[in-house]
Amino acid sequence: EVQVVESGGGLVQPGGSLRLSCAASGLTFRNFWMSWVRQAPGKGLEWVATINHDGFGKYYVDSVKGRFTISRDNANNSVYLQMNSLRAEDTALYFCAGGDLHYWGQGTMVTVSS
Amino acid sequence: QAGLTQPPSVSKGLRQTATLTCTGNSNNVGNQGAAWLQQHQGHPPEVLSYRNNDRPSGVSERFSASRSGNTASLTIAGLQPEDEADYYCSAWDTSLNIWVFGGGTKLAVL
Image (cartoon, rainbow over all chains, first blue to last red; front, side, top):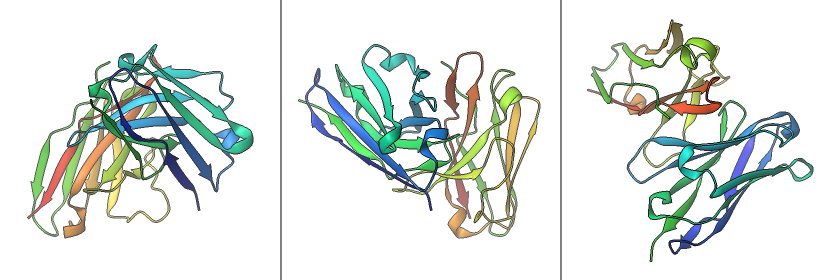
């Protein structure tokens, strides 16, 4: 059974930073593209970033380019999202998703507020 | 980065059939197909259909996906109360190299 578990969310002031982590198991992690998708309270799903299987291909939604960085550690079956210069509009539940968005975690909440 | 187009809401009666639509363009839905996700309130999304319209194991046969041109469809037969949820489509855009989502359709089973 595939399991995806996110961690690292919390309350942060505008302009601050957070690093989200995602651990995946039950799949050959190094073969899978991994993504972060967020959902603001009461809103729909918004894709944030994707990293290809070897980590050399990284893709971002325009609103986070230059502020967020996605990375992965295939030895530890993990993917990360470094979030800098956080804004109020980044407040959302952040999901980690594997493959073609097949496998989802429960999400980790990020709140940006003073 | 425009998204896919879904109707905001659909209402159908118990045991009826609902068809949800998702319209993109030739760089996303028309090229790569669309996946369908179901999300119940307070829960993470679950995939109902892969981009090639196949169902993951464990997903009811009442859910079937198809595509015609730039529009993908999800048909839910024999609607049950537990089918009340938000449904999202997603596709990889090969021109922009991004995932695009629809805004979601809230399905009400009356």
